[in-house]
Image (cartoon, rainbow, N blue to C red; front, side, top):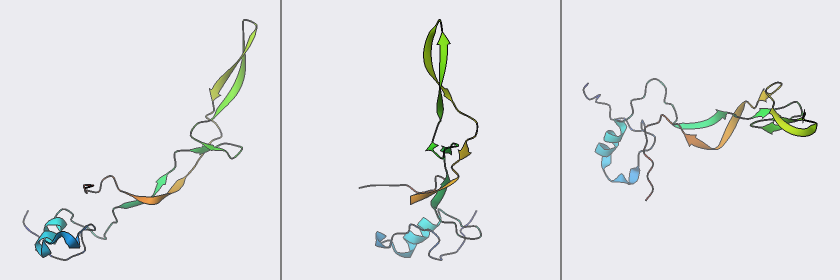
Length: 110
C-alpha cells in the first residue's frame, strides 16, 4: 500500500494547530484515519438505556416484590425479583457526548 498523495486538511478531527510541525505533521496525523464516504464524528450522543419502567411508572435497574412465606409456623418476608410487565427505558441522550470506543485516539493529560 503506497501513499495516497492526498494532503487535504480537515480529515483528522483532532489536529492541533499549535503542534508547530506544519503541513508534514498534519499529514502524518491524517494518515491514521482514512475516511470512507461521509465523515463520521468520533462522538457518541445517545445510548440505549439500561433501566426499566414498571406498571407504576417507576424507573430502576431491577424491581422486587415482597412475598410472605410461612415456614414452620413463622411468617417470613422474602423479596422476589419481578421480570414481567417491565418496559425498557429506550434511547438516552448523553450529556456531555462521549468519545466512541472504536475511535483510534490516545487521551493524555499533562
